[in-house]
Length: 222
Length: 88
Image 1 (spheres, chains in turn yellow, green):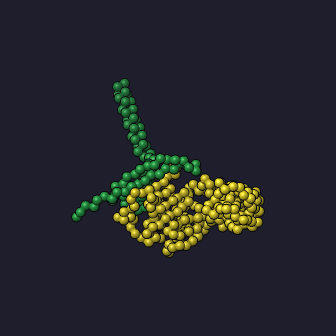
Image 2 (cartoon, helix red, strand yellow):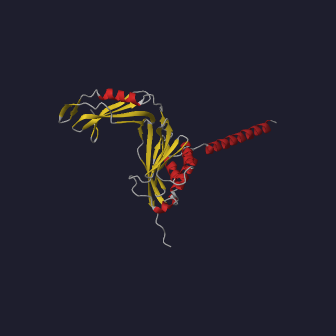
Image 3 (cartoon, helix red, strand yellow):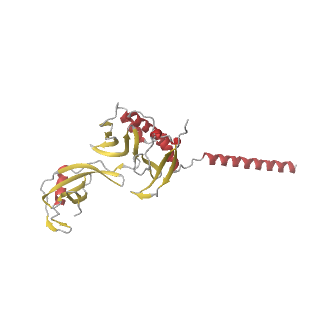
């Protein structure tokens, strides 16, 4: 169980830190997955007065069975997949973590996280259009004209004119979330394991968050 | 006439002191007490997670608090040892 600033924010019954798993006799009375989650959130709301728990219950009200699905009520989206349930705040088509997540196993809530009191949306504005982000990223990527591979040598390097992947994502630092553009230019040609350059740009301000080479297996520091 | 006045005074002071003490005790008892992390853990597991801890012996170990992302993080581990069920 984890506490942040004295408040319980997480419990995990499946953690490998436990020397023993929860004996069946101690497990809560079996109910359906939906009832398990609803009951848990109702009790958690009564216990903590967490407003996100109440909102999450509102999304569950429109659901008759828990299965792999995305359900949205207002600007709160519930994403259910592989026994994990996450609640996301949707603003300007961007999905921001609320900090509330539940993991189900055999209709038992065996994992729970509520960092909603810590997470905040720093900005949901996308002021940098896609084409502008690509132009900025290209400018950054073209600064890399050679790569040095340890023990092999230094080689000339350049990227393709057009990016292969461009997408918006929400990045988090110190519990504050911002929209970012991710632009990846493939190397032209690949130099040993160096496959390209990825550039991350704040979509609200245009600030370059990072620009780095990518490798076949992970990311390399140029 | 002086004696009864003194006695009355003393009685008044005594009653005042007793009343003040009672008020102080009540105030102390009704003051909210901070729950320890262990208290929170046990009440959460019992009430929110719905796990009946009375059926087992629970030992709680605290890990060293640390600061990360500007917040203090503390964690504890509950280890449950199921109690022997008496043969009937």
